[in-house]
Image (cartoon, rainbow, N blue to C red; front, side):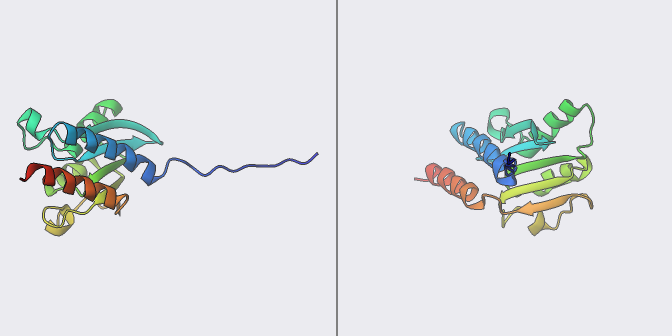
Length: 154
């Protein structure tokens, strides 16, 4: 009797979770919000999902990342997001990077770079232990932003 082992590749890749963030960005787009989406994951489980709500809430701080941080902290029952990964479709701004710093999140994965307002361009630091992965599904995220702003201009 021969035994065959089939090893399945882990389906929970950065691209898998970035697609979840892109779904959130599409929701923002449909609401007339700048299409940025975010999810926070721990142990391959989504514990927070959000998108920009700045227009709906009339609040400049209601970025997708800020909403996700609050939701994840509530889920965990604490303010530190150690062991968590944020997937966000656009490079975080310096405000969001500051909040991510204080949350001590373990990993940040973003899609499209923000050459004008991104935390890297502005020199904002994340927590020293936070790992950063950039460019995951960057073209899809960038295309969504281009499509959104094209729809706003005559």
